[in-house]
Image 1 (cartoon, one colour):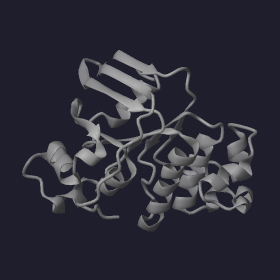
Image 2: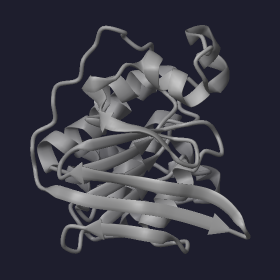
Image 3: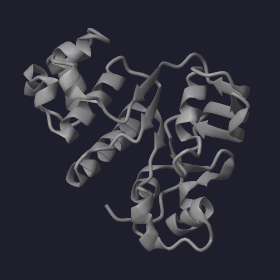
Length: 241
């Protein structure tokens, strides 16, 4: 997928705040992994989190899920159910069917669950190790939403997926926001994804470099902030773009 320089994301709807982060910092063994992270995210919107490797993106997710000690405030509206879609799963290590995999988490309507991520119901009988990369990643999204979370965290959900399978996955993520009102936080290196599928963007390199509505910036400006003013668009291929 390639970024469109003239694309402008519509303004997000002015919904109530679902997540408020104030001066979040993480220090591990005397090393500062994150500092000064502050933002508000509205309910039903999507936040793209971008930055270099080692910039603190996954650390932010772990802090939001209260998996590591941190300072500052992380405040959620009410007591939301949260789901996590990891970078991937080594399916050969889980020799079970899709139905059995989903049943590990919930006894919900699995046919509706796989349909919501663009899969046919007959996939429920297939083993995980028989699926393509794109199918497996959509099953992981289905697993994350099977118990109807309020907030979803996506850690580079198309990592290792063939290029042709990426767009349907992000379309599914956008569908979840539109149809189910799920608030999403998305770690990605792909500026096309940022500009086309997020309402807000947070650029991180251990500290915030930018936070605001996606439509108020450009992918060129974000790349300059992350990698420096002399960064060229051609170099993006070497940074996971």
